[in-house]
Length: 122
Image (cartoon, rainbow, N blue to C red; front, side, top):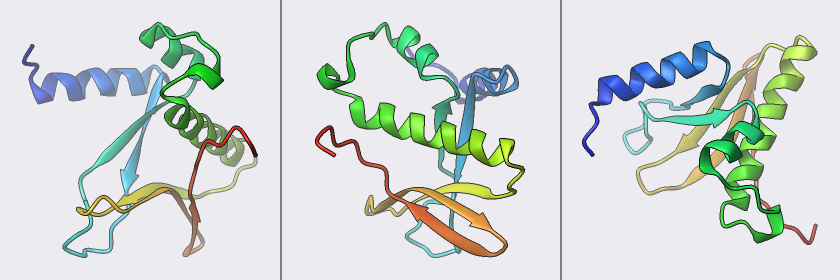
């Protein structure tokens, strides 16, 4: 199936307007090896994510536990900032060599970095 990029972007835009998904922009400082136009897409509600995937097994049995945890963390962090009226710009950072920081917040010119990892033993 070959879907037009503009059609996919319109669908994602509609899902954003319906508050089903949100995009996280990439952070860059105009360094050549940083990705500038990338976006990550997250669901506000992991239940919807699971329903779309048709995957309701427990987290201990899931192949996507890390991605599910990352989605949960970032969505809850955005809700926390909103409810507490904390203004922060949210990003992720990745280079062309696939180095990555999962989540960055910029508040009052200060950057905070979060590396999100699922570990059931912690």
